[in-house]
Length: 189
Image (cartoon, rainbow, N blue to C red):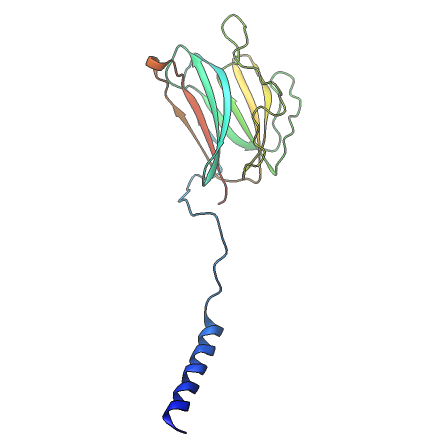
């Protein structure tokens, strides 16, 4: 065999072998975000005189975010308890508050949705859909469970029992922005 056909044969065998052992192209996946939050309850017990003023949601690259806006006399956020539960129950009545999704995240704030005179500071237009989260990767539904005896409860239906974090943001007296409670739920483990 001459050199030229031998070289062509070696090149052909090498190309065929490389095609057989080449890795398959990677499928698109969620970006790794370095999330280490876990899914255990998050709570804080601090005194507070705040009231619920609003609820809003947003989508981010690695998580969905729920924000509870507060107002009152303080610039700091007080007590909260956020945890996965089998079923969220309404304040006062104890009735079940079902939400869409495979997991229920119960959000309890030691802040009423009414002021010291009993006047409402926040009332969702639709208690079953406090915030429109249609199309969100993780959130499925935000439902109102009530505000009773100085405490407000909401049910957050999520796709699965995923890691979450909770943190307060202080208010700024200069701009009349009250404190906020932020709840982020990851898109994946």
